[in-house]
Image (cartoon, one colour):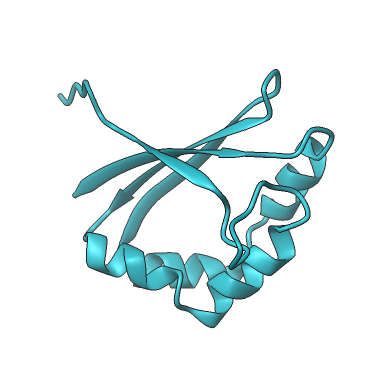
Length: 105
């Protein structure tokens, strides 16, 4: 299992709408994530900075990378683009974080 963490930016004032659009997440997007080896995925919001912290556990980097190529993921990005800082392809701008400590029991 591979652990990944990254930060994205939500536009101020869209906190409630961002949460509403994720609850529940589209069933077809959930299936894409599971089918591409996502074991666990959490997103946390810092209301003070509008930063989104994402943590994901995946089976492989290759499968993780393939998610972006799916029609479902691209529709999701289009659906979310008005709420977030995005790249030219509508994917969320993100900064991958380096793991510096992990405790497992």
